[in-house]
Length: 237
Ligand SMILES: Nc1ccn([C@@H]2O[C@H](COP(=O)(O)OP(=O)(O)OP(=O)(O)O)[C@@H](O)[C@H]2O)c(=O)n1
Ligand SMILES: C[C@](O)(CO)[C@H](O)COP(=O)(O)O
Image (tube, rainbow, N blue to C red):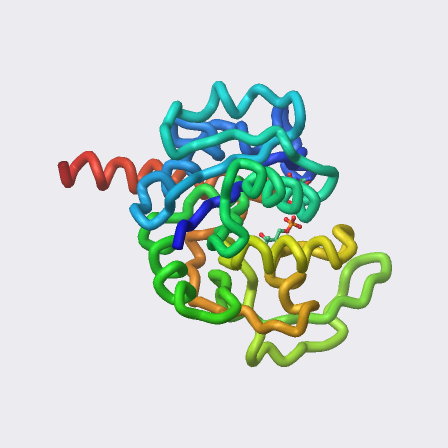
């Protein structure tokens, strides 16, 4: 069964101010989105990789390598959910089958590895629903009470709570139907749309290294991690 990667890359990165959206910031010698795409191209199980950018955004073409399995779709929307919905319709228009698997992955999670992608596919390809990489909550969880400063009003139980990551892997038609039924403003990840259909996506153990670049510190962390991986690969060669 063909497997497509769909990489929403049409955000404006308001939490990481700069001269360009975070997916085009340079870390370890390449744009953030280029590192993300490289991991999927290097995963032998992924048949096609589609980066979804805002209409008229030519920056991805400059930032990404030409590759037979890589396509750029100018189908981005106002929210992440709309970008993904329009990207799925575009995939269908390009000849993808409704039953194909789609792995949706944030452009901004640029430290994903081919091994982690492979692990998700292995865990989900025989599952009736699909699933996502996720991480059991590692820290104690506080309920804030806002006043002049934020204060901890209570400590909440964290057993059974996971942090959702990406990739998130679902059948193309199921995911598209789930997103079309939901209000995009309420949907922050694909799994939440699937859950609203009464389905239960599989939680597959992720890694803290698969963090999303959201704030300026994350960019520095990605630089350190990707540069150290590249140095390790050079010394092993
Ligand atoms: N309309 C949007 C909004 C987000 N994204 C993508 O969704 C991923 C995760 O979203 P997030 O980290 O929230 O990115 P931004 O929306 O760009 O950031 P912010 O919320 O700080 O503005 C990113 O790869 C981003 O480019 C997208 O394709 N289309
Ligand atoms: C999809 C996601 O990365 C899972 O954690 C996350 O929900 C994206 O959220 P954001 O608010 O758009 O950063």
